[in-house]
Image 1 (cartoon, rainbow, N blue to C red):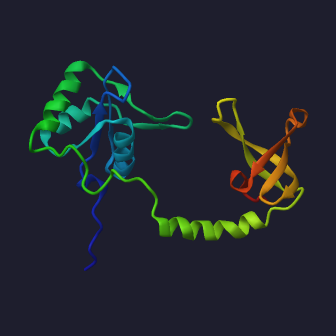
Image 2 (cartoon, rainbow, N blue to C red; image 1 turned 30 degrees about the vertical axis):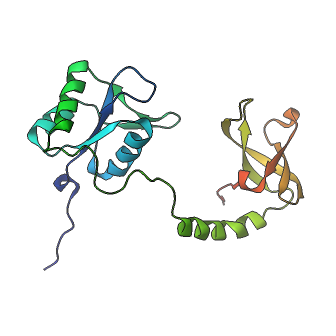
Length: 190
């Protein structure tokens, strides 16, 4: 007899809610059990609460929340919730039957040093393979230093770990200097 893996329906969904740091309006969303780690990350970084939706009262409240959605440029979309819904979720979270956090340590989101070292070791040969005239992806920064996007560029010179690049679609904007870790390979095509 083969034992079947537990289905997603066997695990309860989670709800994220609260007033984000620096905000004034309560927001909330429910997440499927498969997205529990994403929900924990959102709750941690936005200063929100996260609860298991395992009790009937919690399930009824979570049903009134929209599903959390990933937006390609703005992260996770959390919808504004009414003040009564927010207060009911707070009361539910403060009760002993509902856990205010997920099991496990979700406070430390620093990558494992051993895994990071292994990934860097895998990336070093790729970065070492960059040559003059290679087409790569490189970020463009605004005046505040925030990344505006990644664009195709050609490598013109390599001196130590500094690469002089030029955008393929906007040659007139001039040259840019980028460090090795600011370049990415383009997925190879046939």
